[in-house]
Image 1 (cartoon, rainbow, N blue to C red):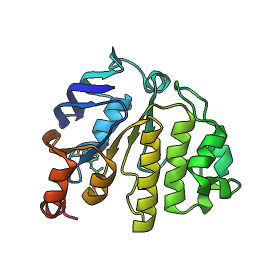
Image 2 (cartoon, helix red, strand yellow; image 1 turned 180 degrees about the horizontal axis):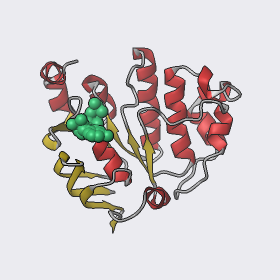
Image 3 (cartoon, helix red, strand yellow; image 1 turned 90 degrees about the vertical axis):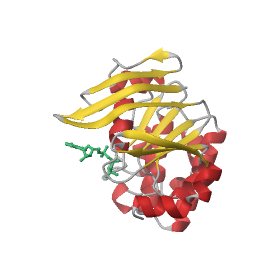
Amino acid sequence: MLTVDGLSAWYGEAQALRDVSLHVGEGEIVTLVGRNGAGKTTLLRSIMGLHQGATGTVRFLGDDISALSPHKRSRRGLGYVPDDRGIFATLSVEENLVLPPVMGPDPWPLERVYETFPRLRERRRFPGTKLSGGEQQMLALARVLRTGARLLLCDEPTEGLSPLIVAQIGEILREVKAAGVTVLLIEQNVHFASTVADRHHLLAEGRIVESMDNDEVLSREHELLQYLGI
Ligand code: ATP
């Protein structure tokens, strides 16, 4: 579904990504792990077209989308869930869900969103400011599904959430996958990652230095956590 080839990115003179290539198959969940500053966010933003100053090729469903604006990438079915969650704090949950225009090819009806995220139905009249971190994360994911994304690019959805809520996010990601949506996510909780994802890439200094399956992640969990400084 997504093929990234030879992607490099800069901030001025400083190179943040170095010749990154990866593939995400339709219906897969793939994680990016790596220390702070490894380039994970820059990689997701470059795939979405949000980072000015990236070179290389991004192909989506067979088409080269490298020259397309973020807006046009959204229309093709890419959806970005930023680490600050990007929700409108003063609007209600339901307003957050109905306001963004449908752009992608596979929009979820509101009812389907509420079936997948029953907590959001309960909270539908609440303003964004009154939501817990976990509820905000659910809303951020739900909004992107509403707009019709077929590939979610998620920047660390479990960051700062309690184990119970992390488990709920895991359930949601599994449901999203069962619905045929593909996910590329940043995830530092490698144990959690091994329970939701199919494959994992380790980034260091802007490069993919290792690619692992779940068995490898689990057998090296301690070493990886030490390396990541968690
Ligand atoms: P984190 O988890 O801390 O966000 P990351 O792996 O997502 O880390 P990036 O945020 O992509 O890493 O950063 C990659 C490199 O680019 C780092 O060296 C970082 O300092 C640098 N960088 C990121 N954003 C900027 C910016 N706006 N201006 C200059 N350099 C930046």
